[in-house]
Image (cartoon, rainbow, N blue to C red; front, side):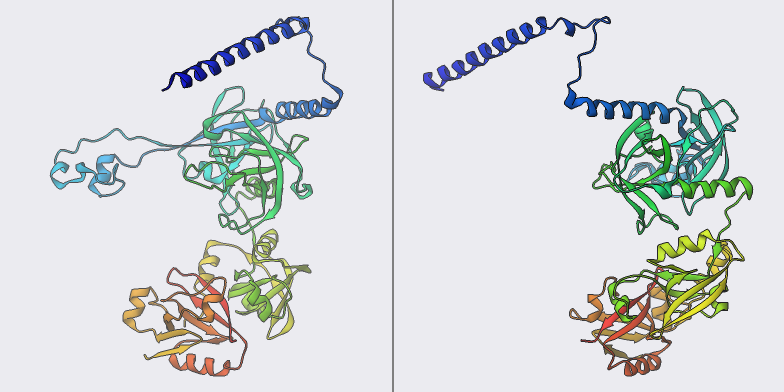
Amino acid sequence: MSSKTQNNKWFYISMGSIGFSILLIVLVFLFNSHPGTAADDNTPEMAIKPELKSLQALNDAYIELAKIAVPSVVKIKSEVKPKSTQSDQRRRGSDRLFPFDPFDDDFFRFFDIPQTPVPKRGWGSGFIIDKQGHIITNNHVISGADTITVTLDDKREFKAKLIGTDPDTDIALIKVDKDDLPVARLGDSDKIKVGEIVMAIGSPFELTRTVTTGVVSATGRTGVGILTYEDFIQTDAAINPGNSGGPLVNIRGEVIGINTAIATGGLSGGNVGVGFAVPINTAKNVVDQLLNNKKIIRGWLGVSLQPVDSDIAEKYGLKEKRGALVLAVDGPAKEAGLRQGDLIIEYDGKVVENSSQLSKMVASNKPGDKVKIKVIRDGKEKEFTVKLAERTEEAIAKLRGAEPEVTSTDEWMGLSVQELDESLAQRLGFEKYKGVVITDISPDSPALQVENPPQRGDLIQEIEGKDIKNMNDYRDAIEKVKNEKRVMVRLRRSNGNTWYIVLKNE
């Protein structure tokens, strides 16, 4: 380094030191010139400037809100007792401790030493809803737990017992034997508005009594894909692992939702500003049924549904995407006359916006209720009266098997197909079905232009309402629709999923 450069270096350092000293002197002067700034208990607070008073009021409101809401929030620890030792697991060749476990070698199994079983623990949050000690949380927080421990805001701990759960809405009700507990205020989630301020409370990463604030980003959020009945409140208040089951409260300190899930943007699994809460009104209904009926009773229409995309909407003469497309029918719907391919557009006088909304409306009814269903079929509107049954696991399983079963290679609209034989059926998992399998799809195929395109190995079951069971059915069907600009096709995948696509013949 040159002498000139070194001189410049020390010049800058010296000037920086002089500048820092001058700044320090100025700060000391200012500090001593304001006698009210000394750090003693008798010193009055600095006056808030008029333009900052609204900010101070907001600050005070947050503090008061936390004082109101936090005491009724609890930390929940769930524990699952081990069913076997690690040594037993190694003998079964499962749940290895490492990707390549040297102790899984046959030779070393002679020297297996039983390990001390280690219980699996989970953490979450909840909130007390009455003086009898009932607590709402998420089902996934306590699912499968052998013991549930609740820690109150004042650090008291109690063992809790499970009253009941509803996996379809991810709500669980537990109870502690104590009657002097702080109770949460429950609000009305039907009245919340996008943009209103909210506070999320819980134990993220096991950090108790944590509050975060944000706003209601959206309401009625569906299509998240984690629950049977979705009607989420979306919020940007930070929600992280451990917040599950805790309350989302409004500025009045009322619980309007149960923090349930987050969207993550990376490997950390942390919050990215998109959190989801189950509305408190949904939880109220679940809790009432668990306390009164000891189980959840819901109406059952007897249909499996598919969302409507823009192509399906156009096929049915709709100007926008709405309604729910019927994939399969059984029970009440079948008895009333509904069938596959019907597009449900009204339920009991209410417009059906999407399949998730329809599922929720049906679930809100009771078995035995009679409802009006309006559908579009063959380009015309038809109305049916359906007497709902009770939704049970047996009814669901029966519906899944209610869809009709559906050797040369033909090509149509870019799809190459082959009749399903015994060998191909075994390979693809279609042993119970007959039909036509897609063997290839050309790059410019109309099928690749739809929102949920088919793949090789998918089974074609229906074309424009005609069941496809063999190549003859297939050829007859495509002959009849050769002049159609929009052709509806129902497909089945080896994982059991079925759905409709609309092929554009342009």
